[in-house]
Length: 101
Image 1 (tube, rainbow, N blue to C red):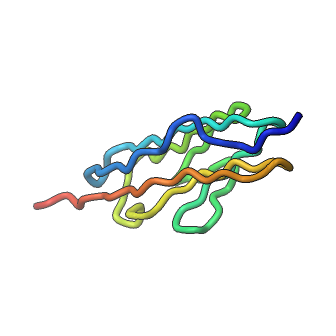
Image 2 (cartoon, one colour):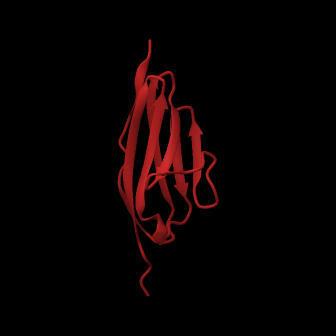
């Protein structure tokens, strides 16, 4: 029996200072186990991450890590869980304050 993906908790908006690390972690449930993907302002992030973002996924639990947030990280981050049974979306806003002199 199939069930559409759904997230167990909502991502929380975060406000940090420039240079601070950021972690978004979420988990989806559903049958079959959904595939997980991350987006920044509607643009897909590589599943393996890149030099700015590290993505770790274990089954339907996934984390997005930003080692040092910068001004260009002021954005909406979205996690999508998808399977043949449906799609679910979980998103949060990241606000990065610059370092004042």
